[in-house]
Image (cartoon, rainbow, N blue to C red; front, side, top):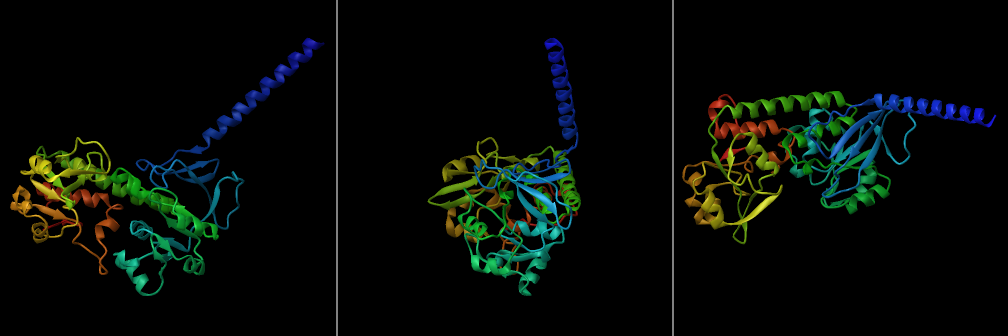
Length: 378
């Protein structure tokens, strides 16, 4: 009798385990693979019809992952983990805080959803500037000191903010006041296409994921085509970058930096390509001169906008070959009507155009009909 009961119990346990295993397998099969290919700071996952937006790099060295349950307005809500913040989409009233957000929002034709922006003089886009001039977009302070009272009056559905080295104290206070905040870490991405892929983040917010995917795929295809074209040229021109910014220290991009990646993809010989680090290097004038006196091109010479400025700063710049041959190019001279540098706003969204600029300068025969977008010769 005992043996029979024991056998029945074991059989029931086996059936239960088998059934549970099938349910788990079924759930796994219903998971839709992520479409994020390059970006490391966010992800979009869908399991059993439930969509989540994950922010994995809200700020530098962030170890916390922020999870948002995406709920489409006026649709039946699914049961979800109470630990996830609920985000209703599409967003109709949004406060953006970085000029890099503007081109992505515009490409999705959602600039009219922007109701607030800090220090809007930095915005160069004509479409969004028109909204500012017409009073549609309200000034909400500065990046580091957003005006809580104005924000409460605006009553946005969401603030898209960013933090530098930790959660922004102002944004934390605003969130406690009842305004939804989400961090955008596009600037932390280490590759050009990784930054551009953040348009998919905005695609989720505006419930335009397919459109965002299509736009990014076009940018990616264009970028990779230019990269492939550059490889056809066997010649690798040598590249100098940066300048002396203060105290006789020359700052230039490290070998694994975002800027160095562009030069590598353009099939060029960046003279500091083998250095470590993803930020900038601080070097002496002598060490830079020893290595780059005969460089072919000088791209992005700090904040300088003319040879005259370089001479006024340090006459020794004349000793470099690209200075003598008029082969110095900068992105800081092309500005919007209120003084914002167009490169800082648009380049993260359009790395394909940045790469075309570099290839056009260094290998002009490869892009005979292309006109420079960001870079300009001194």
